[in-house]
Amino acid sequence: MEAGVEFLIAQVALQADYLPEYKSDPAWVTAWIEVDGERIDLGAPPSAGRYLVLSAPIGAEARLWVEDDGLAQGLDLRTGAPLDRLEPYYSEPGFWTESEGEFNTLDAYFVSGGRSWTLTCHSNRVEFTRSMWLEDYGWAPEGSVFLQVEFWWCTGEGVYDCGVWTLDTERSLFVRTGSEVWLPTGWTMRDHHSAAHGQRHTAVVEVPATESEFRVDFAPIGELEEAGTGEVFRLGKFPDVFSWNVGF
Image 1 (cartoon, rainbow, N blue to C red):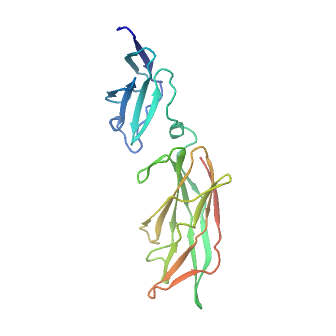
Image 2: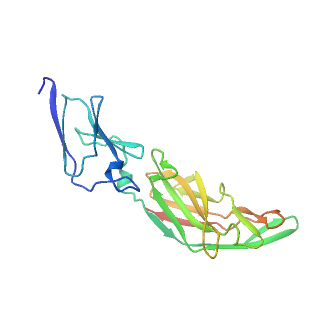
């Protein structure tokens, strides 16, 4: 060894290898070692049980970096301490989908001038998914995770003869974590190809990564555009609010 240089040996824990979401090949991960400010690229991240051996200036910082979909996770090779706290992505609280109860908006009352319509919409399944990364959004902001709320809604052609019932995506849904209230940061709709037609709605809410229990409130606020005339009918009374408690 040259003067002032030492060997640094680190073993990767004997646990399962982790792969990027939606991929099945470790080649999709970029890995490198940073020693005293110098970058040493690796062909692949070290696998479970394997060793890393490198020469480094005595006492110099040595870090292993692994980048997955643009987010780099660091590990101190001397202490094993993580440099970026991403444990929730791999452990508790969990990331999966929960299917909760139904909603049934009975007799929603719409008015315009002296005319009115009464509509009902029913869905027997609402899905809640907690995730760290979404294809359309990328990684959740630091300290946050995504909570998706997905359901079928009675809108579009072929549902009602009278017209189209459109939800107000800025006021229809919100999430509570303790005393905090969180509104959707994104809302998408896609056609649902079935005998009932309608659409699949997906609301995305950024919530704290430290929370695992959520209350979701849904009030079908919106308006009805009458077929043929294009006249807009607004709710004559506030609709029922449906609430679900979901945990991960």
